[in-house]
Image 1 (cartoon, each protein chain N blue to C red):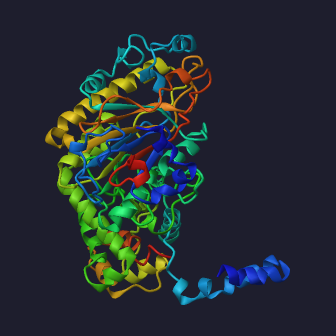
Image 2 (cartoon, rainbow over the protein chains, first blue to last red):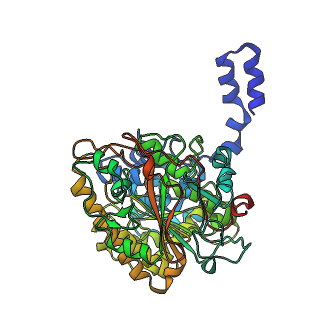
Image 3 (cartoon, chains in turn brown, yellow):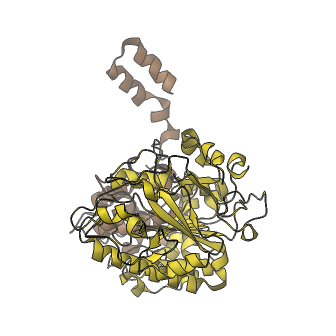
Amino acid sequence: VVEDLAEIFRENYSTMDLVKKIAWHPEFLGDEAIRTKVRTPVERLVAIAQGFGSGEVDQRLGYSLHGMAYLPFNPPSPAGYPRGRILLGPHQIVHAFDLLAVAAPNEYTTTDEITARIGLMSISDSTRAVLESATDQVTRGALAVNSPEFALV
Amino acid sequence: MSDKICDLVTRRQFVTGLGSAMLLVACSGRTVSVFQPDSTSGLVDPTLALPNGSVGPVTDRVLVVVEMGGGNDGLNMVVPHGLDKYYDLRKNIRVQNPIDLDGEIGLHPELGFVASEYEAGRVALLEGVGVPEPDLSHFVSMANWWTGKPDSSDGTGWLGRYLDGTVGYTAPLAGIAIGPGPSRALLGNASYAVAIRDETGLNPDLPGWIDTPDELMGVWAGFAPGGAERETDPVRQAIGTAVEARDQLAQALDGTSSARTRRPTIENELLLAAKLISSGVSPTIIYIHGFGDFDTHLDQRTRHDNLMTQLNAALEGFWANLGSNADRVVILTASEFGRRPKENGSGTDHGTAAPHMLMGPAVTGRRHGRNTVTEFSRRQWKPDPSGRLSLCLHHCPRPLAGS
């Protein structure tokens, strides 16, 4: 990929051409590139807030994000924020439930309503079965934002 | 141990040598074989270590790292009371009446239990521990300690890389952080580590509209059924791993929800560590962080005295609670840097090298590393330039363990 991009860039050192090449590259645009990036805690938080509306922000959010090494503007080390599969560690995904402090998903009842609110256009049968088994919409919403599909973007 | 061995550890090895099971802590001219016989260093009783040549991903040995965040003042923990310079540089915050060890150095008077363990041969004092190019920033210095690779930006930790090379994703409870979140030292590229704050184990802090996590987590486990779907999906594998880790911790800790309100003190954290070690969880590494504030710019006498009191009581309680498990445990203290020898008002500023402790029945108790007590200047300690301290959990590369 890098050689591909470098070849274009070397032709005339045009940043515009390089960006176009990146944007149309199969590695960027192809099916295999979809749902491969692990959603960061901040990306999870934003999607939850967008999907379920937001009341007052709970102060525990800051503590939770800090514990997940994702406090905005305060990376845990000079190497920056963790990324990739590290974000699927037991602490990270269990405490992803904490992010629901930003909004209570209690206005939407059905699985389709809930998944649409958080931008999940398709879910597997097994994920649907788990969501359907929830006894109330709050639990269903909480499960949706911690489903395998929601973990990736 | 011969200095030749230390000389074999070049800076390049410091940076690159950590992908294996060799784990390197900092500079001191010492190779410390914790879980493998190492007659050259004399730091570990070979009868308590693994058989010679053993290389195994899992043993029942446990390393407990106690991170004294903020920069512990090593000069007031291991006091060079035989040196006039110490008293010249510290008129307000000097330690009075240290517990003498050898006429040259002594321990803080609140470290009575540690002193008795030293006398019994179960404490190794590692002097002059620092990094090659000290940085006085907490941020950078902690990163150096966590990663063991000052020039690297990959962000993995020295203990995480050890887990990568041994248990991988198969044993998330091999590395457990006790504190506000995962320690960067436990961060690996191909392994998980669990972080817990208290006896409640691994549970979310749910908003008030869900009363208990048990029902929610029970349903959540449905995302990770057995079979092909889980095998091929790393997210479902991760959920399954988290659920299993949570269940195992719940069984081991028998926690209560009220535990969450307790204060994060070193005493509480070490008691929790002892409980984990004695349970069926079988951790290899426990990393304790996020307790206390060792950044004593102001009011150091009172604050550091209190910290030493707490540390001593916590260590005493820890070993008492371990019982017969004590033989397989080693504690290592860590801190991002020491503090300057010259006091500044009622406290001290950020420094460089400092002494640290290895503690446990498997440790050969005495002073180790070059005596840097005489080498501190007004501003800084000088890190021991002769080499580096390596901590080998299982398998040290031949040049380090040999000759």
